[in-house]
Image 1 (cartoon, rainbow, N blue to C red):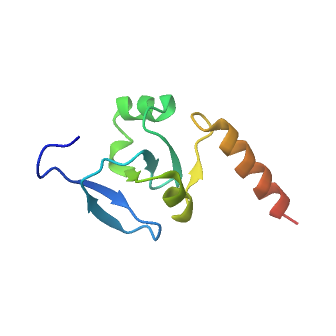
Image 2 (cartoon, helix red, strand yellow; image 1 turned 90 degrees about the horizontal axis):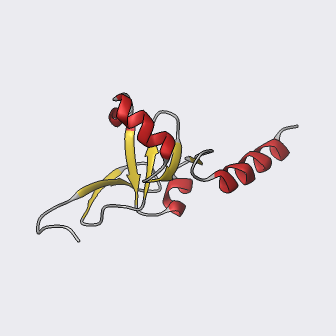
Length: 93
């Protein structure tokens, strides 16, 4: 629960930001177009190094991240990443 007046910036399916009273359930990297869990070990390591925060984005749910063109993280969403990778390989001629 947030304190009165707290807002968070999330991305819509079209990639545009909006303000929400909900924190969002998924994080991502705008440059790499990768989404994952908020507790992702790879993201937390990158954040600890200081170079990730500038590109950090948040989504209300996984479907919104996918609709915005982001792919699953290979570390914290390994099963989803493997399915995404397989589907992508099938698309190649």
